[in-house]
Length: 87
Image 1 (cartoon, rainbow, N blue to C red):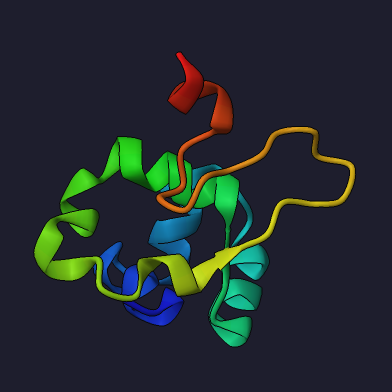
Image 2: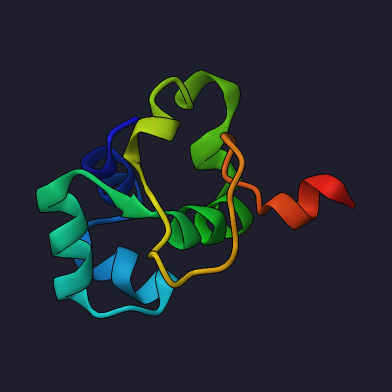
């Protein structure tokens, strides 16, 4: 699923921003770049697991943006933090 589809399923730019606690211009940028930051994907997996059911996840990894260089956390392919996998 592409970033634009995820945002629309959340109810659009403003609704997605409210759900994730960010400003609408951030969500607009994700939509434009077709890329949602990994931390926000993680939030969505917790808040809206229905968006990531087996029938809707075929393209999910493609829309995940890599963590920032100064971000010490690492993510595994399915979006979980590496620490989670080790536990």
